[in-house]
Amino acid sequence: MQYIQVTFSFVSIQEYQKDLLINELAEIGFNTFEDTSDGFSAFIDNDSYRQQSLTDALIQFEDEFEYAYTVTEIAAENWNEEWEKNFEPLVIDDRCYVRATFHEAQPQYTYEIVIDPKMAFGTGHHQTTTMMMQYILDADVAGKVILDMGAGTAILAILASKMGAEELTAIDNDEVCYLSAKENSALNNISNITALWGGKEVIPEREFDIILANINRNILLDQIPVYASVLKDGGDIYFSGFYESPDLEMITEACKALNISYCDHKKIGDWVAAHFKKLK
Image (cartoon, rainbow, N blue to C red; front, side, top):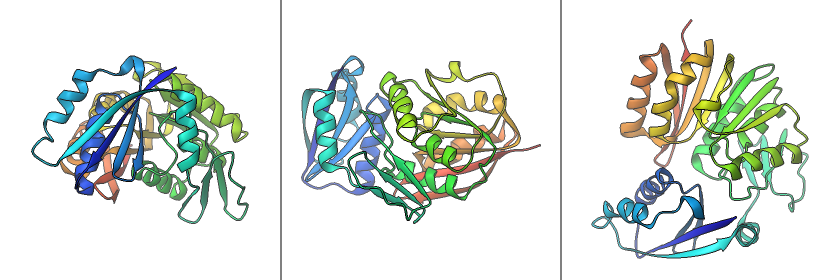
């Protein structure tokens, strides 16, 4: 499969402006982002790339900061070579160690996750993934049936499985993510994760104790009614992939209308993750 790499460089940019730009790129299908010395690179599969969509997304930033970008077509194996050069192991809350296959194991940590992203989003380095992992580490997931939406590499489902979750369904609408979820489950000797390729239409008609959804605001708002229909009374939802304002309030109101109550939220930079519970 071919991919498009769009590499941005900036004379000067604030972190919140960078986050806003990344969010806009995610809205049009970019699913992997890597920092560079003077900006970042964004990746999207060749079939999903539209130059006009990129141009439209960038219009709103023309008066905000100066930027330049290049567009390059690359093969997946070339991207993975670049990723291997730059990927560093990650420790979450001194309990979970995330590494690639070429890093040494660190058995002193309670949980170790091996990730080979294959162009799929989710190595734990992005703030949204980090916060979701923090929530999972503090949650009671043992024996629970869990739905992971926008699963990417399946890193969240893998962590929950290692913490004793009974059964997990990992869904992503990107074929690369679907295949990555299956591969990473095998890398971690996980057998209770079912990976599905699609969106809300492939959510199984069953009840879940916990739903994990790290996507973006618009997709979350569209899918929340479906989540509500499959979440058990008293069940928990953990959301991320959006900003505190105005996104959190919009998501809270959408949940409230479906008897799902806001509990609390975390924030790293401008990104937010939030915990909700379905009322009994």
